[in-house]
Length: 347
Image 1 (cartoon, rainbow, N blue to C red):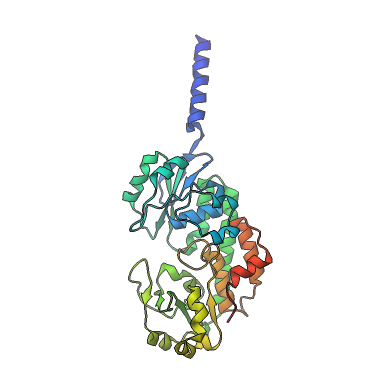
Image 2: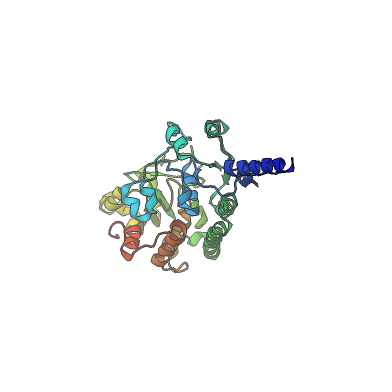
């Protein structure tokens, strides 16, 4: 009888281990939800761009798939596994739809949801319950939450050391920028216009998620208003830009950057006259916006070096190489660093 009991107990233990139940642990996510997650998650699906990018920074091998197709020109700046990673799609946003067949085939054992400014869609989350795997929420009120996000991911993914390392780097970047900005009177900070679109006449209100870096760099956005929608792209006239007469123009589109100095009316803008027009780096992910991801941590260093070259005197090439090594696990060549920072000839 005793032997039979021992065999039964042993079989139960084996069953628990093989089904993964013995390896589960309870965590509290950033919405305060208690969730049982795998001890060591193997595949994670993040149905938003914010979550996908943050997960990549933590450990690219955990990605169950991309939510969008990666441009082949960006392959050299990514982990080689990303070239064969399936494109699953996303569940959020108008017209967005995840390929559930591919998602099911990827066998994720954890889902990383993303909540921005206390907005999260339970209806969309319900679609993912078909997977019968736990999901946790990261909360992003603003860019300053990233140290907490990395620490949370370190806990959720059982990669505490990695999470703490990224959190520490991020927090130091924010503090260094704040220390410089705090010493410069508001009136002496450069006025900045963020040029979006092929004509440069779309921009963002200063309270938009898309220009949080301008807020951190001294609240220098010239376009003061309340953003009309989450998407942004506020249209302005050339007369408005001339009235703003910004000291610096940062540009999203390479096509516009290449032609701005040859457009007569733009030559009247102070930034163009003084050759302070800068193209935002975006290989493999945008440093500033679209989407506003963890790459903004490096974007803040870049922006500060452009706005305050004397006060924030860094070796931007060295910083770029170090950032990509830490966050992207990529060792950049000198040529690659040059291509990232200066994809076209400087003005």
